Structure formats: C-alpha cells, structure tokens
Length: 327
Image (tube, rainbow, N blue to C red; front, top):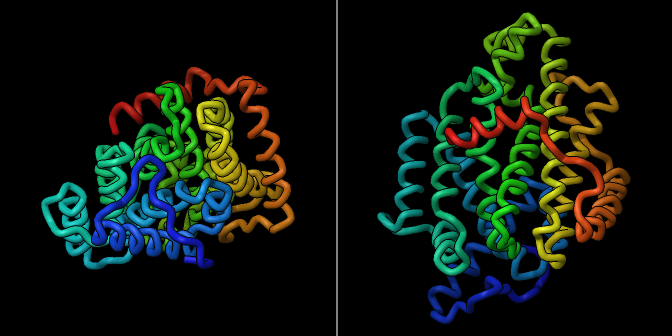
C-alpha cells in the first residue's frame, strides 16, 4: 500500500468492531500490493476512483487474484483443486476466512457484491488448473464471462451502478478486457499448456491448439486468429461504452480509463501488425497518457449518451448471449 492515507471504509457503511477494522485494513493492504505488482494498467486506472471505492476495488481484485494464482501456481493439479475448494468454502462461510476473503465477504454483506459472481469466477479459474483448449467462440466467451465479466458484476455495486441496464455493459467490458489479455498472452499461455484461441478459428487457418501449444503452428495462422479476436474485443469495447452513462460521474473516469488503457494494447497490436508469438505488446507511457486524455473526454460525453452505435451485430450478439446463458 502506498502513501500514508488512512484506509477508507466502503462508502455506505462503517466498520465498528475492532476486529473488523483490522481485517478490513489487512484485506485492503494485501489487495493494493497485488494490484500494483500484477496489474499496472488497472492499478493506474483505479487511482482515479474515490478513495473508499479504491479500497473496495482492491479487496475485490485481491480475492480474484488469489483465485487466479491458486490455479496458475499450485501444483500438482489435484492440490490446486483442493486449494480452490477451500477458497470457496471460506467464501461461503464454511471455513475460517483469510483476510482478503473476509474483506470480500464484508463487501458482499454490506455492499451487495454478488457471491454468485464470485462462485462463477471460481468455476472459470478451475479450468486453468489443467491444459486448456476451447472449441469455439461460445466456449471462449463463456470462459471470459466466468473469469472477467463476473468481475464487472462484482464492481457495479461498488461504483454505484443501480440501473439493471448497466449490467450488460459491465459484462461486455469484462469480455473485451479478457479477450485483450488472451491475445496479449498467447505465447506465455501456450508455454503453460493453455490455448485460448478457439479450435474452430485455428482450423479455419489450417492449424490446431496442439500445434500452438508445441510451437509448430504457422505464425501467420496464430496472428490471424489473434487479430480476429481483437476485432471481437473492439466491438465489445464500443458496446460497453454505452453503459458508461450508468456509472456515477465520481467513478466514471476510473472505469473509462481502464477501458481505454486495456483497449490500447489491442489497438497497438493491430497498428504494428504484432504477432503475439513474439511476446507481450507494451504500450509506451506517452500513449497511455493520450488514452487518459481520451478517457476524460469520453467520461464527459457519456453523460449525453453514446456518440456512435455500439451494437454487436446479430452474429456476435448471439454468440455472446449463448455463452453468458451457459456460464
């Protein structure tokens, strides 16, 4: 945790019990540390949220990152599954909760952060325990819904989003951001046995997930599929922009900044014709600064509604709806 600012309590309640105060403070500290260490773009964006919201978002991120790290780092796979089962037991109150889980439960009880979304996220990260192959776009977006769109659903109560129409936008932003992550990390994921590029799209370019995993897939095929997914992400980002108006102005810039900073990874890959097999794309600081300026303008314009049509189109909309319905 940076600075000496006193920890803010979640916006609509006050922690009164000393034990709750200590647990909340530790949960915030752990969440902030992991946020700064592992999510630089998101950490930058959250700095523009109100202080109390920053703390609550850090706790949500800390919980989500804990689940992700258990799936990624604990081996053998059977041990990872047991650790994830224990985490879910802590979440539901069936086992003593470590601080970050206890802090998350406070948000669920007092701010309405949905436990159902957290459980769906755990269902998603369990897939990462083993080698991953996804059959088609529906399977891909279902995975993205579980591990990322659920985060948007957890964030909505903390941001003050009350209109149900804001839920679809939160889901679409989560889907878009996870697609960006997937394309950025193709090489790293393949080295760990995980291929999130859909088998159906790879087949259309003459290759397979197994070939991506063992490094024999044609480079042009991987690049083509990656850029197809970036185009899908762009459509979802544009659609999600329509929901910015549902976020109260005090929190809107932080979320708009997160959207622009994440989207800029894909935009840079597209401009530079980057192949994700060559490693991660890094967005330079000057471009991040420009994206923040764009986010400021978008934040203001959102008060007057979207400035361009954000429809997904019938094809992507149908795939998106099937994926989310089956999550």
